[in-house]
Image 1 (cartoon, rainbow, N blue to C red):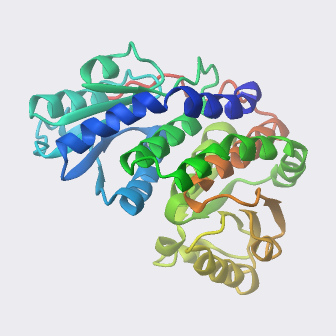
Image 2 (tube, rainbow, N blue to C red):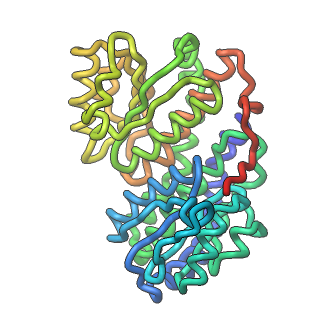
Length: 344
């Protein structure tokens, strides 16, 4: 797993260097189709990538992104109308029958269909009119790391291509591999922080905006690898009830890169620390947010907010990996899990 985490800068660099022409072709097909909205099917980690697309494509491309309920297509056999949609399936393996079914129904209804997968010979790829290969190489670890950031990069590249490859946006993408490498170079800091949480049984994970996806993914990695009951929330949604869970000593993890939503998050974190006396761990590139925390990791400065989920999640991956080792668990064999999960 650690090897796959460290491969990410090279994978992200190669995607940018080699795959942009194919991404631009797909972007041209999308513009010709002119969909009214995007209908996106995914499970697990890939669904978190879809959550990132909801924010990114909404903000940059004015596309509404709906996350599918695949059981409507399989168990209930009552699929919604998709004839004016761009139907996308995101899957590391491209094997899950319910995600494939969504694409098949979209194809039958006349939708433009797209698969984003790490296996271009998978059933999902064969069912789709267009395919974008995440090209992460074989991922042996059950917990997805490099395939997740590759999915985020492909989604970001497609967003930029739909905008005509604006130089400012292309430049922001070009910095991402180097920023990820900066995080990896400070792995020892995250390993040290992980040692302080070996007794943790539950925690709360917060993010907002582009990094709501990061909160979901960080919590999933904690559950998969360490069996910690990690509850992820948008910081806005957290204040509508779940905040009652935060009491003295409760571990609260927050990913707060610089963004328009970071001031609201900072206010919430200040309240949680000083009024509810939680134990706070932050991932942020803003020093004034990190100094609120008991534990913090300074993310690289200079990130465009919309690419920060690709960089910040790597710090979370390393933390989870080292916490797994510190708790005496095997990061390659999470209990009850397999690399490919087939749902119907």
